[in-house]
Length: 279
Length: 313
Image: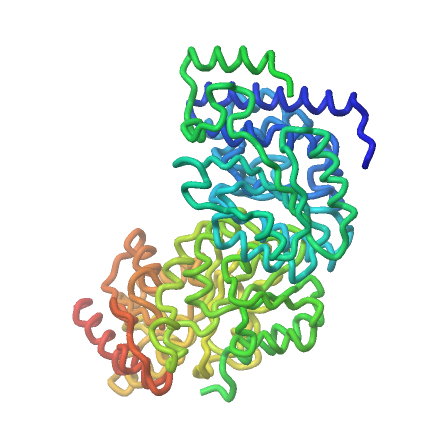
């Protein structure tokens, strides 16, 4: 077991709560976005950006920085929130998400937004791109660790499993895949639309060390991320069981809130719930 | 005709350039013995990645390597690369502006024996429609070899198509290339024939045949289809008053379309297209006779010139 003080857990939980409040406000203000899948990964992003990743917001191009790829690009609002709160750009930029001329696109754009490592939007690319980053740092130091956040939707795509083949071939231990397994996608429950189970068996068969956690339990997230760094000669996947829309009662486990915008009443209700929300 | 196929000239140049530029890495999708990236693989095994039949993932891995500071040359047959990995190219290469060099082998009809599944006759159309992507089609082996350092040292994504076959020699060892600049291969005042890739040699033969009829045909070789050398082409339109384009590609969306798009806005003149008309073509016994059968013969170019001249009046 790795030691993570209670104060760290509390701090990260507070950041996750802030991410959800930012996302809610951003989606409400812009009248567009993806609250459900942004809420499901709030603790994961908080743990990565405020603890795990070796990064320096003042030097987004620092060669030795750890790389994080958001393969599930529709959680852009959550990524923008955590990047702003970590200091990559001013918090007030979040207000101009999706405005003409603003640097925050509907889905992440590596050219426009400081701190965004790779453009994403269509699901599934991140794992293969991450393998490329792993191979690159082997050839050309400095070395770094690469993290990629996949969704269940990502893992329905062929290109993601092609990437898994390559990660295994090259024994990409410098790679940690985190899977935000909220089991809800645009059209309904992932287990109905296109089942992924038995998922642990699949990842193991593809040559990964598999860790399973509750993706809203920060202590478990930190423990898994540390454990992954100690596994050599093979890549690790952390299957994070999460709840889509986590934190707002009427959004939880609902496909409707994959890409829906709250009305005034729903916004007020959701904000009130999140303000009182604790993991 | 060159002594070695264009793919071999490319493969050898890539292996040699790998000695000089250690950032170059090469990816292939189980066709390195066909694209001839195997020369690079033999010489630089630590910088060669054979990814099997995972074209989509290969392009994404190439994007990741580029993000990590390498200069990836990503290879497979042009049809597989631009069709199977089209969305990866769009999102992770063109949109993300990663420094990936996409190399489409067996371009056009050059894989005569494998038939329409393997032909690439819309790769230029697809790649040309990708913002940020430079699209090149070297005319001969000299240009194919010169393109390797040129595109490697250009900062940004590139698509290059390479013929499987031997193609006519057009240039000698003194030839130099500049990305984005067309080349006047032969002067002429009556008409301009604009060719790309393996068709440039045929354009020269057509111009020689036309000279016998006292028709003076200028020949331009366009190795960079995007960005197009609009000024050179506008000047040719102004000075000769008629244009014929010739390409080992569909007439929809390729070099001919690019030339027409450019001229319609600055100097419209009669244009005739030589290319594969809207069909999948068919399997043949060799590249040259298949190209002839598909409307790409020297005679087809000459006939197109005559049509253009009649329209010019």
